[in-house]
Image (tube, rainbow, N blue to C red; front, side, top):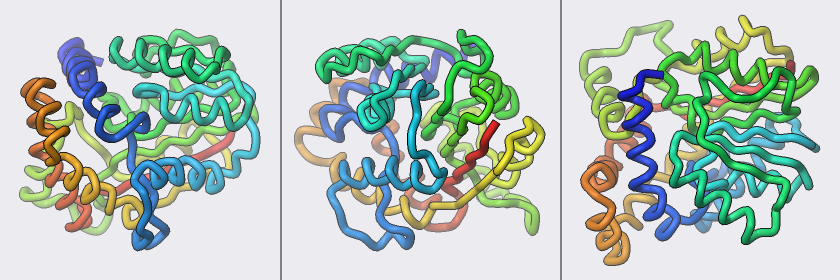
Length: 279
């Protein structure tokens, strides 16, 4: 991971995570609004429902030692640790996020959780360490998608389950991305500190090369797309606007660009891709 990109991602989340928690809570990921995206529900409940639906989809019934790659402020890590009475480790590039996640673990009394600053493409863990490796909306930040998935595979125990959920662009097997689509993606990359995204079939090809077994993929774009309407509506309350002013320009720019993601889903360009497999 280049030092510049590393620093950009760190600074983006250092600056914005406190505001996100204040306005939107501990889960820094999409919500699940039913398979067709038509269910009306509380946004935080939708985010919890996404975790539960992912576990169900991947067939995870228990876990003893969990790695959350791109853990944010510990939303998924702490939820999974409590649900399974498991040990959980979260890694992030943001020292602010790691510190806040540690505080939240202490507040919740979840003493078997730990959080640290680490690069997901060079993890500080031994081979075969975790029986569940969980990556919820962090793969889009990785400059080398293959290296990232290889690292997730390396630290996964034999028989363990890998679940990755990530932003993708539409498949290009029938038609390449147009110049307008490329520009739309580049605008998203610039705002959210992404090197690039790839399609779900490309992720599946990497998973097969690892090689993971029992590989499953799914596109849940319809199920999660309403999330961006909810975030946009909540971003322009007096509390949120005041928080944005105090959070700095990068966070303001991110808020002003929420419509990029909404339009990306509407035009079928942005996809919400799932990959799971067993080592």
